[in-house]
Image 1 (spheres, rainbow, N blue to C red):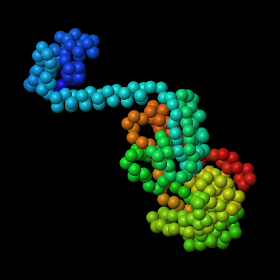
Image 2: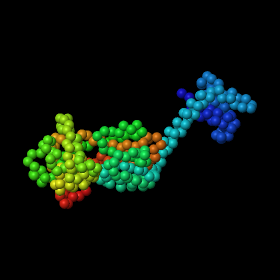
Image 3: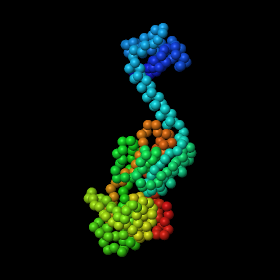
Image 4: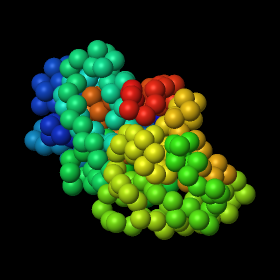
Length: 311
């Protein structure tokens, strides 16, 4: 393998159209340049440059172009390392679903203390975000299928499920709840756009079904649906971390526990890592290290019952 210094000095001679000009540009002796180029020619077994008193003729033009590409790549790699080592500063735009705002609220103060030079602009919405069009740096998503956009990088965290839940008081009003009559019960839905909704459920044996229903409340905020369910307004399909704390406190009870949504993949998406700012990289790494712990902490929060609910 050739010495990178030999390649760099050869390329400098070509760029400057001569040894004297290259020596002045690099502030090194002309003799040193000649020595390195001569050694490179000897190792390759080919003449790369023809010197005369008036001009320099480049014989190895294609070789020079490859050398320059290699050197450009080294420069980019060095810039990337310098960026990683730099103290993160600047503005990062983050998008997340409404259901993840409590977890972000829990972990972002520590992120600010660690990276005080980073400013965050957070868009909390369940609407599908176009990162490129809307100039979003990072998006947190929870979906049953990962994105297939080849412009985006995916960093996967894990899976969650949604489970059916209702207040014990509501369930005493119904003799026997089955998957067949579930749509006859009052329901609560994440669908805030339409008067009807469809729950796609899977049981413990892998059987699937679709439940069409007309919810009493349609809202994309899980906390509103949870409170409505605790108050006995209807059956809700809630993330398992919300269900677990409510089941433990006794303010909600499982409904058809053998049925749930399919796996919902929690992941980050962001444009190519090439040219990524240190602030964006810092946020991605921080979320990867802390988000699942915040999710577990959310499971441990205990609602105190209808009318007195704490987050």
